[in-house]
Amino acid sequence: MTTLRDVYVVDAVRTPIGKYGGALSGVRPDDLAAHVVRSLAARTPQLDPARIDDVFFGNANGAGEENRDVARMAVLLAGLPVTVPGTTVNRLCGSGLEAVIQAARAIAVGSASIALAGGVESMSRAPWVLRKPEKAFPAGHQELYSTTLGWRMVNPAMPGAWTVSLGEGAELIAEKHHITRERQDAFALASHQKAARAWKEGAYDAEVVHYEGAELIRDECVRDSTSMEALAELKPVFRKGGTVTAGNSSPLNDGAAALLLVDEEGLKATGREPLARVRASAVTGIQPQYFGLGPVEAAQRALARAGRGFIDLDVFELNEAFAAQALGCLAEWPELDPDVLNPRGGAVAIGHPLGASGARITGAVAHQLAAKGSGTGMAALCIGVGQGLALVLER
Image (cartoon, rainbow, N blue to C red):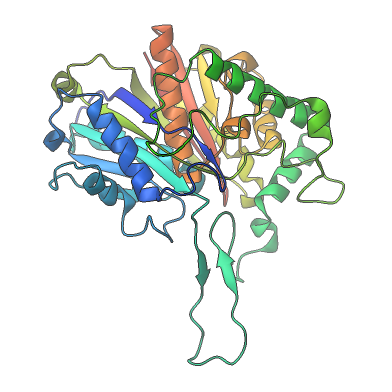
């Protein structure tokens, strides 16, 4: 029987998260990915980049400039040796975390000793696509589809209940758990306040690597001065008389994140102390329209595999796709201390560049555990089309 190796997170970096059409909109996604790969390598000068066994990157789009395997393009653009391979994975919003899990699994079973894992998304630069016509020389108009977010070119065999918009899915969760507009707005306000405070206190200094040429020194969507009154003025977006607004939803964003993972031998090659150790992960499925509740079971399974419970968590980074979604998950985790959830703000404030978010929150957990000196942390995301993904780290 093969003994699994311990897997360590040595370092984690991310860009500041740009808003849609904002400071990072002029940067190609493969360049964003290359930037975090290059930065990660530069922060560990003792490591010979040729020793990197593989690079795993998450990306939810793949239809634009990040096509042709953005992980491999990042390796080449970052100036790593051409002998370093790269593979791109897509689990939609969970892609960045999926990349981390796949890298950790490769190391655990002995297929790799040193790996990079991360994710990237430029929602600003997501292209419009045109389907090929059923026959040549069509006389009528053709429809363009935006690849920025959500369903497009839906298979007619899919039940309509499964293919509602992501925002309508959040409305369904609000109904299911009786989550009022006021609670959603209060959650959103707290997310902005915590993120603004974290930036002011320098909590992100250890992990954020600025992109040269982009005038962006912190996450672009964090609103220091927002208020319950300002949030209350916003109209529901997805349903007449609904509760989900632009203010209590995560925005559209651009950004990238990456982590360096190693086994014991690889750790010696870095000459560094690890931030954290990978303990367990889990992925689950759920009714697609209730995708936002996907983390509920995934988090429970991951903790059980780690031999831990919610009471053991010192930090929990839950991706805030929507305030209603996060509150819905909290309603099903009564034993979780809400004070450990997203202590430095979440995606409602920071942003949600789809393929990068899983790597961002995993790196956030690792850095927070390192700052604490010891403890247990977890990263989890909901995933469109009905999935949940979670990873447990310890130090």
